[in-house]
Length: 363
Image (cartoon, rainbow, N blue to C red; front, side, top):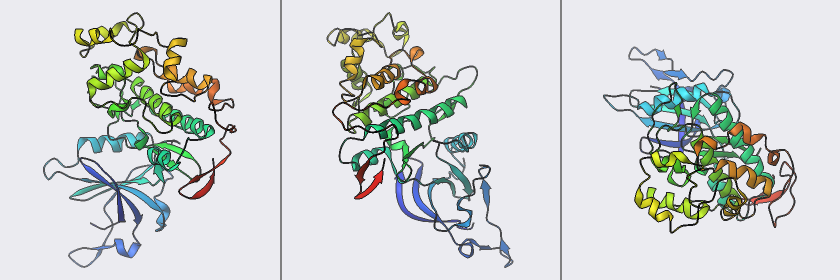
């Protein structure tokens, strides 16, 4: 097989795949020779992204190359096949990372994605201080637009976290990436695994064993990301295990109100031991009430009231009452100018300058 891309440094690694920064190989470098001496065409399966052509032979353009090792007997992992199918389904939409093409050989499957500068986690670390509020609102708007697109196409991401949100620092555009755990919502509703979403961003209903979940798990995770951006990159609920995670959420935001979340007692993770422990925690606080908003200030201490109004709807315990991405985007927080408490004023687009890796850029 020809080598269509030249791999540079490794930028990520998982159980079944590694991700490299890559550039397109020059045409002469990509040629291969058949046994009879004739030139052969590269073995490429295009991802079907319409007008997207991977660099249009621009060998300077950078890509993110996800390389998956194939099993000798089973071939491509089902997760990789599913990821490609879902990425094709979402092709061309803004705020979703772009899949350019898929290159297949006897030993590897290469998914060629657009390359963005860094992920949100690294972006927050490199800011060396609080994120400007205009930028937080901009990133949340992009995240919710991306989620609204996924959910409208009946796709659950199931692993939203700052590391899977990529940033273009030239345009301050956020895009959702890594659909390795994503699933399509079927009819009837599928029973999914509850071992999804990185622990710190996992919804309480999933932590308690719910397997008939839907779009609401992505909304909870997005709410956790929102709070993390506001709180200088500090995770809202940094638990150490499934048990400590649910207890940390309840200790921070208050025990669940059984009248507001009647389905909690039917979840497999709900038991008398946990119920007894709740007696030693904060008193039940109905989600959406002023008391609940005060609890939210523990994880988002600088957020303005309109922002808290959005966050409280994203972090409702009962998944049936959580706001949708599209509904959240309609809230006044995303259409008027607000500032974080104790911060300088930024306009609606975050038009300010701040240092990032030693360079100046407009936010």
